[in-house]
Length: 282
Image (cartoon, rainbow, N blue to C red; front, side):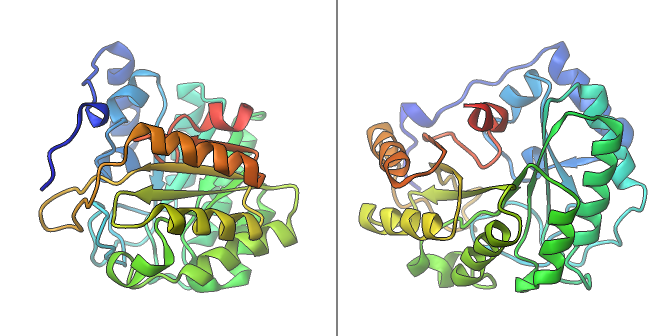
């Protein structure tokens, strides 16, 4: 395993605000992708009284080589979960709420109805909050995507994750073209809904391949983009091939803006929902 450079290291933060977030999540029995994916920014975000909600459990039906979320047979969705998420968002006083999920290929609609119910209740419970959903690909089913869009999220996020060449090793049960088509469908069907995607680097890709992926995302109507350093969760996961220098991240950011993205967050510790409110407002 490669030695981490200084620019990738984080500082652990603790305090009453982080405890406040922990208590709200624990009392409601809610999961966050911050915890399940071992996000390096978890302490920072919790200390700012924000988190990314993970709905439909913490067991994924897929097993991507980069992800720390556990795979296996998940439990049935909790019918009370949408209300719990809406209540937690109100208690946290969020102005921009990010809601994601594990991939639920075991459900007929891939969990789209759970997203729709959660969006609806958040809107009802906290009018004015910006709602961003980070969704799986729903196996390419247009009906599932439409049900989420009909509920009225402000931002529809779906991560491309990596370049096309690495999909067989990194995301063997996903499909690069299917993910691009999902973003294109969203923009075509609901042009007022902002679209967003995220990309990890340091997995063995070239700069040219990254720029090609950015071009593919723009051709698919993607509005917002995040680019961050891949960090392997363990020795059993896909290894880090390179720690990309911050100057290259800045180059990607500038090229993305030149391509027409509304905004680009590109830095080693950037994650898909990291400082999502700031990215959207700017």
